[in-house]
Image 1: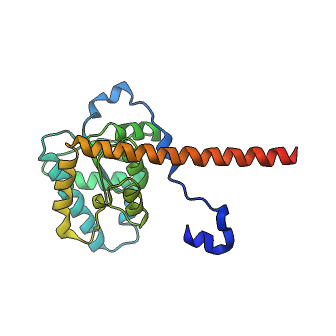
Image 2 (image 1 turned 180 degrees about the vertical axis):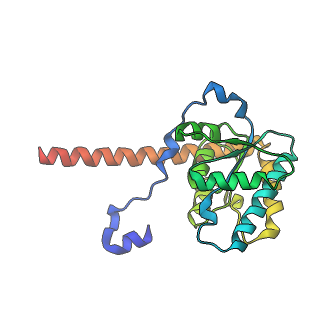
Image 3 (image 1 turned 90 degrees about the horizontal axis):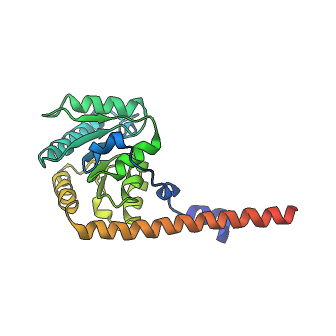
Length: 221
């Protein structure tokens, strides 16, 4: 926002959240079994263009998440959010865990979004996967490749649920914190409050856009 303003945009620039937080698709009946599951959402961007050490570190993180989730006794799912690369990471992870994890790979992004919203908790490296979870008040742990992940978690009032992949020593604590938080109604209530505030900001953004379009259209007419 500061950089945009520095270009001379001034008060014409507006900062708004990711507007996909306004989408709340229904979960298809055929996928009712995913409700209340723990989701792992890998992202190929975490390893593209990186050395083998970075890839190995990321796979170690995913493996720890998977084993911690499996230890809860809840259903655990691997969600392919998008693309062949994510699918390959999921398949690779399944060769490294103590118990194979069911893969959810839906062609419709709306169905994928509904699956995430029905989860008990998520660990996600996909930005829009996190938006889908947080906007549905689903406790989530973010492990991303750019600063926007931390900013998103801060927007939803839970910056402590952002993981630095390089800080291996913090992984177990962060995961335990997530598992406990997923059982806490107060955490979910706080997320719901933040989600409502973010949705209001998105609605205000669209109202402003529609108002501007009407103004310009009227001037042309």
